[in-house]
Image (cartoon, rainbow, N blue to C red; front, side, top):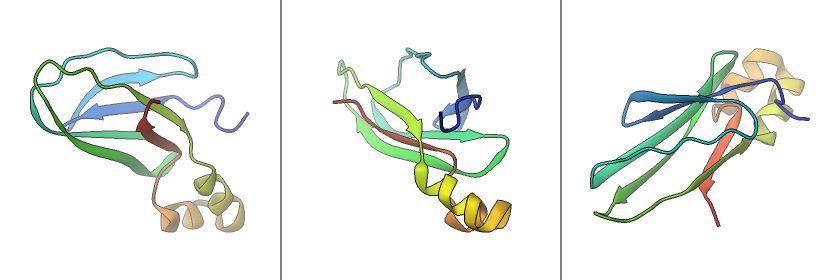
Length: 96
């Protein structure tokens, strides 16, 4: 239930590409080279990011999920605790 009503704003190399609700997916193309994916939400300070070097013709998959550490920090210290924790409301990781 953690962050069930929060949408995840997804940026690739500084450009917003999607606003994902729980269970939604996004498919896009990235050019070969350095890539940074950032995930955030307007109501939570901080953002999660993942960087990698994209190879030509390769497919990459990532999962965005709630970041429990941010939730605990916000419970303990409110908005200030969440800002100090700094990783935002979501985690992003390569899909297995």
